[in-house]
Image (cartoon, rainbow, N blue to C red; front, top):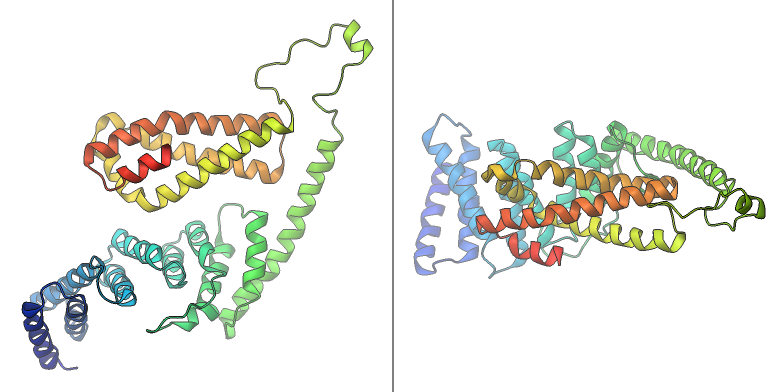
Length: 359
């Protein structure tokens, strides 16, 4: 469509909007109309072009907030808003936020997992990319009536997985290597992209064998140690070696299981909540000097939780495991009231969800 035609098209849409204020379909196409005019002359030094880009983003964001109308159109409005922020404005907080919104709105689509993972791969953050692609690796192609980007399901998600895993700076868990191997076998990538995925699948096979051997060695070593709760021998009693159990000493498998379940639940709830509201939380904590150290405490709590999960996978000693779990739970308990206060002070949309999180 030429610039003149796009201009006339926008005028017709504006007249429609006068007759039907708030109509989602009209607002959606106004976003496309202004985007086409920007793409015809993508010049930030041109006031008219810059205006069209801004209005396009504004209309797409409006459409994302309108519940009436076709839900797939609303999802595409979120995707277009993210594209404008990422590709033209370089506003990465905006683009990731829009993709996350689209992901929550239609979690069965793999597109957003791919977009976010690709964003972090290109930004040189492979560990974040690997974390973000995980949820989209095994999704089946959903039935949708509008455009489906089949290449995401056939190749692109596996390509981003491979690139993130190949460049990851942090250790990858045994379970994730298993997922990489399983998902990677499904790829239909051609040429060099296919070779990338095949290479990471081969690496996954080797890593799985290596990590299993390490686990077996640790397990064998643990079995070789005397049980902590064994009955004392007569010689030990006579020698006075059977005093009271020290504080923090393991009390057996049942105790570990109780702490384990508490920690897993807390990690899951905290991770889900922070993934949704981390940007808003960061802004809330920045508002008041009294919460200056709270962000560090919050990050430490999450890091401790991850350490707990790693310990469980490596099957370290009971005392070390319980100590790490308790450390995390203590941090979580001490931080939650301050976080609640910070959010309430802003009248935050995250406040209600925080109440349900910590109850």
